[in-house]
Image 1 (cartoon, one colour):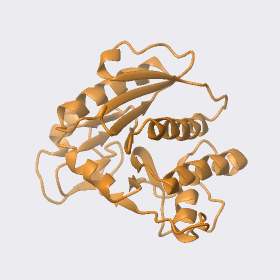
Image 2 (cartoon, helix red, strand yellow):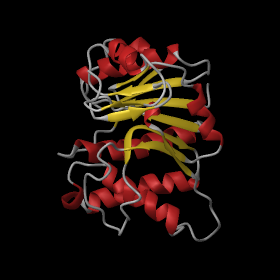
Image 3 (tube, one colour):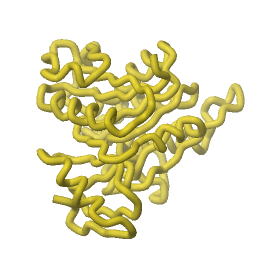
Length: 252
């Protein structure tokens, strides 16, 4: 067993298919030993390409009309399951991601940080419970790393608690409660019974390249994130030249 888990959460067959494509692209671009997981709510059909994943596992279905609330509940449950099994590092990837270059430098961050992710393109997409400053925007949760730590588990629990208690405020948006939870963990040290460090890092766009939006890159794009039937073409356009480059209308 590896100590790195790469996790996809999917609730329908079309997402299973995209997740399989992403998982195969990841394995192609890493020299590390990683265990890939597809988690799906109980009752969801099996993926057609189940061999793209080392493990396909069912989750107890969480009933909600807001899928992103369900996903937050699932992320917490998966995190607890996998860390209990001994995984030290968990990389959550959305089904519509695609690894197009060496991803191994990303795994180095687990040695130092509890949490890492890239800023959401829109920065602020929902209200917050706490007075979070504009300078602390949302993290896009399509590519996020979480190390095994008491602080990281608290953040996930707090995200779920806030989401459940403030559905009307957040809407179907998990980035808002995560922004709140990260802000509280980073500024008020809620685990006050002992000194617990929490370290987070913000990735550059190359590691979560939201190509359906206007975006920017300087180095080689590593992880594409968006909807396309031809990810290889998107990768060639994104990395056709290196150096500072702006994609004012995204990459098509």
